[in-house]
Image 1 (cartoon, rainbow, N blue to C red):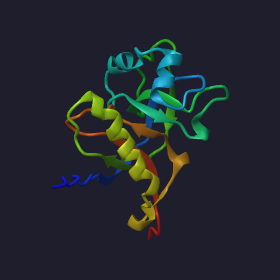
Image 2: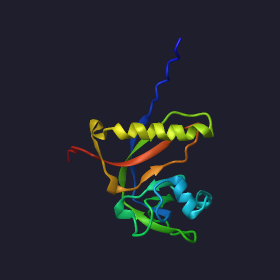
Image 3: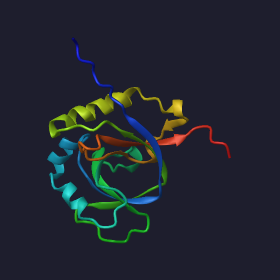
Length: 171
């Protein structure tokens, strides 16, 4: 008797992100996490975790063209801070302003081992390739902010946040 494949359920919601600052460390040419770590080192996440008063946990990000500097990578790591943050910025990092935006959050199912993290990420990415936000009244808004990738932790699954704009908003 063949075993049934368990359906891969992805939770989706839209959240509002306020105006905020972003402390980030840019790479050179990286377009994904491991490439980025080879360029800048594997200690970035620990440095970001040491910053106080963050709005969110440290995460990987794909910066839209309007937030990239010439000669720097698309993929970066950073942490969001309150818009009025005036604290220290670690050496080798920078701080930029992010405008308010809506983010569509995609959360895959939990997984039970580090070995399954890559599979969980790939499955979520496959689902995103065919996801149409217009069915839910939204459009992708890549220039509104970075695409965020949270640390894949088994108990919560893989989570990504993509900027969107609401369609047909009546005023």
